[in-house]
Length: 155
Length: 123
Picture 1 (cartoon, helix red, strand yellow):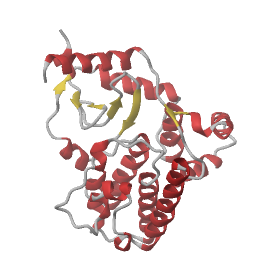
Picture 2: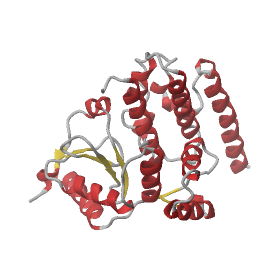
Picture 3: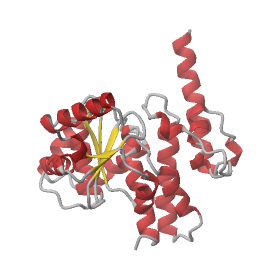
């Protein structure tokens, strides 16, 4: 990796660590992907955070907070024990700040894999947080050699 | 565990729900291929069908941004395994007759709708 690419990556990482901003998603409530999640969430409407999310979502589905969408999906559809959306941010920060995390660059965004291979965080070159995924063993094999480790960016 | 049917379905679901929705699809074809040869229960087959429908519907909706690497087809893979040919699906040039019935319906309906939208814009 040349110095210019290293500088860009370092800027993206610094941005994603400094600001916990996630992008806005344009979700159509009639899409199958959304419908599946919304149907699950309807079953939990009696819970305040779900009711509030659904209220805000239906008011403007074209401007859905990606972080909240991820949180609702993980917690209520996938059954992951999360205390709040800030826990996703904490996980994100842990992945990005671990010196042993590996960096990949398959396309426009950077993908950072935690040392235990449990989480793959995607960030924009502009420093936006995009997604936090659990990579499968097949996906890990496909990732191949990393671009670098986080520690390679620390001077 | 990593070879079990639920694990493989979950791996596919993960990449669809948390990757594709933001335009990422790293390992999606591999995850789908790993399920292709499995003997699924009725419930699992239903889950798989829904995930496949989500992928096709998402891909052919041109309003969704998808990173180019997701759309790079693998010509070495059989055309009947549509998950290796997401670029063709996106471009509307995948042979519809090779898709399972439900996916074909979505592909044809949404492709036609996309063409109408494109025509409306160009008028």
